[in-house]
Amino acid sequence: MALCLLSGSAGASTVDTGKVGRLYVQSTGAIAIQLDSGFTNATAASQCPSASGWAGHLSADAVLKSVLIAAKSTGQTIAVTVDGCETTGWFKIVDVYVN
Image 1 (cartoon, rainbow, N blue to C red):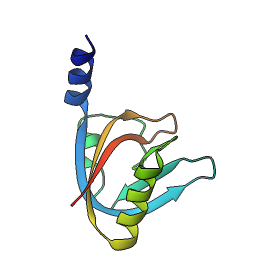
Image 2 (spheres, rainbow, N blue to C red):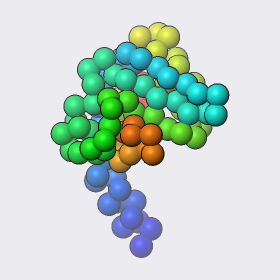
Image 3 (cartoon, rainbow, N blue to C red):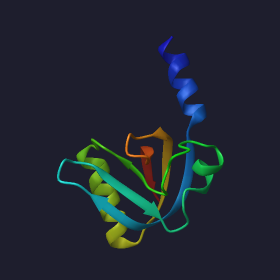
């Protein structure tokens, strides 16, 4: 049953690629980004109808935060997988690949 749930979730996610245009961090641990090319695949798939162009995570792991900050600092292209919404109206980041 768990395999079925993971499989269903993976099929619903989308991937968008670009450079981190803007980066937002909050003292409570939240982090969010805007890609320079936007989240066109996530928007087209209606991942989060209330999304404001940001993708993030309210309680992101330190590794995820480090990768996003490093990508912003170095101008690296990243691929961001999102699945659904955070309560903030952000696309919810599932994982990030640095190209």
